[in-house]
Image: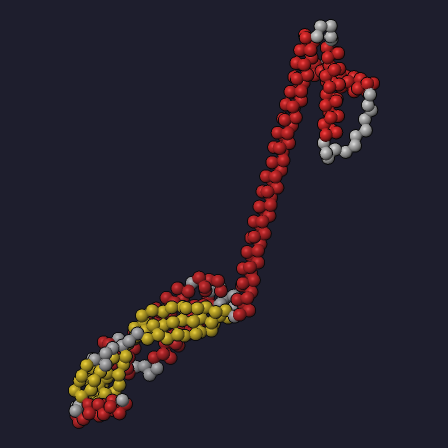
Length: 297
């Protein structure tokens, strides 16, 4: 295959013809001096009249990745990776071919100059946030410088900012500590709310329990009063005292029955007998009378 291509080239030279590929331009010289730019296609190149092909120039979009080490305003060394996309201009092909011997080295030098002038003015966190501003500064400087050499800067990107590994580890630890502190504050606030709600619930429960006990006692008093009045009417000759004693004795035996029927009840030692019942009734009656006098006063 290579021999066939060489044969075609030799035949083209003998016939004074040259082929320029697509997305490429060729530089034609005559007696060592620039003559014209050859567009893609077939061209006549009479070598016997001093015409020759000096070289070719690609018009395709090219990319150059530049890695630049610098430091930030807070003295943190970082590696800034910039990606430069550029191409030669067909109407300035002669400038692009003759004025620069090494395009990539020239672009890299300008990128280094701009990055090392921009990043040291920023703190590390600001450098991450202002990547677009850094890229715009590099692009503006390259566009101004490379347009004179026949090149167009299509786009400039800051693709990465890499601090030292120890700095990244320290930044992660700071971030983790801040998140832990925030979580601890939120947990403490949640526990505080739970304690407040628990105290409010206990207070409300005690209040409702007090209302229930008060209503229970009121119902007991009302029931006893109705029982005394009904018994006095239905049994002639009985006094309110007799009826009250009988009701208290009945309540006493009901209480003893409940204590004995409860499986979890402990042993209760109380005086038992008719005299003891009379003493209990007297104590309850005296207590009720004292309470009534206190309420009247």
